[in-house]
Image (tube, rainbow, N blue to C red; front, side, top):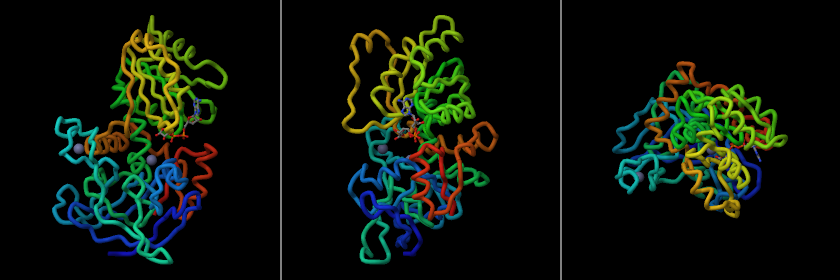
Length: 370
Ligand code: APR
Ligand code: ZN
Ligand code: ZN
């Protein structure tokens, strides 16, 4: 057991606090990781607002990279000193998805068994709920060893840590779920961190055109920097018509994009994605809807008549052991600009300020560096 500083959300809506927590020595199948960098994601804010569940106090942070400090009994995949990106898909190898070879869908991912706890104050000893089973706004965190993916140690922690969540979700939505390749046209609706990552992934895969759609000109500018060939301000023009027009200019007879990624998570933008794809095209929903949202009015004949696929993308359908090292290598080769996602590096005490900036759409990612 050791004590470290960490950022905790104690109660619904209350500002986060920097507190001392207890991190147990790793047990069987577990690892303690010295965190070097961790991005601030919408999901962290969502936890703080009680939007995920009520299991306060939360240990926030989940887009992280660091160095393995110690491992528990039976751990063979990683060793002390390894540079790792943390993931929230430690595959079990036993569930139905894993057994049939679809490890990226694992239905029984796991986290550390032991609990980290608050070390001081009136709630000393209270167990923490780590965000997405990670909890990396902390000098050190306890995770399942399978949540650690070893990558090139020369990579910048603040950049590659982002692969742990939003950036992987976006890249994977395009290349894993949408199967984007050379010769495909892509449109991405919503150009926040996830959407621009889908654009970067599409560019990496050689797709063209790559059409970015957003209602905010700042976001469209960021999208251009990530490889968008065209941008559409959907507060001004009908994005469906624009996507059809642009694709038709590139590919004779095209009536939309081959793949449309929805990275907002709203019924109206999903419907735009549905109608902006070409016949036999694919819609990928990576934006996360809220429970009360419903599929918009949609003639069933259009679902049938347009063919293709309507898919959702969980965590970019990524397999960390396959995708993280590959993407880190492409980053090291200068083919994937992960640095461009890091708007600023901040201290661990600046997370509330980072939430404010996120709220105003001023940043792609603020990254806490420890
Ligand atoms: N049409 C087009 N773009 C829109 C619309 C709209 N009607 N409404 C919002 N947007 C844009 C915003 O301007 C912003 O650029 O969608 C983007 C959303 O980006 P962020 O809020 O930064 O969210 P991000 O982190 O990218 O996540 C997007 O994916 O993983 C999920 O939970 C996440 O649902 C969220 C989505
Ligand atoms: Zn499994
Ligand atoms: Zn996240």
